[in-house]
Length: 197
Image (cartoon, rainbow, N blue to C red; front, side, top):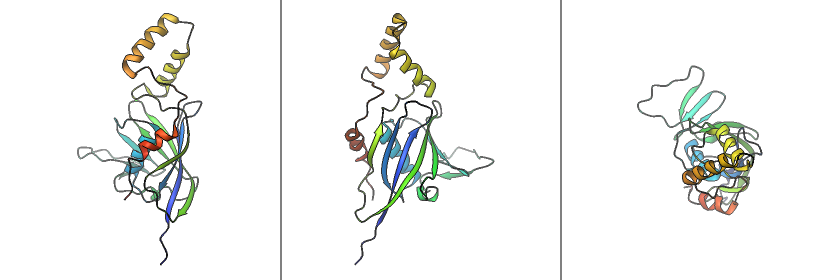
């Protein structure tokens, strides 16, 4: 008896607007929902899942609807991320969707379908195969706030202001943030908590 093969996507998740870039490359099944993809992005990037999110395609906004929301978009369909499968909008290599996390900081991620493959052994959980740089801290103020943090960490000209900033930063975020840090084993440890049925 022939074993059914699983369609696996290789996705690149790239945080928009930051240089040098922050990104992850992950393997996932094609039949998961956008809500499941949201959880995968959270773990792969290192976010804490504190905030709302949405996906946006050319003709749809995909998120978790709130029962009290009466929001509609004049040009796009509003779809439930817990019901819509990613293969509906990511079906060919180079297809892209935009993922926005935290509508205060507006962290935009470009999600690109890089490769489609068939596997006889199904993926038990998502797998990160590559990535670069640490995810920004939560609630740091978006791209501009993050850049200010990096500039202040590296600024030696205004020593008093830098010391005050670092003291505040250590109290709020801890003193162990390294923007260049990326540990693939750590990422895969987090991703291993997301099991596919």
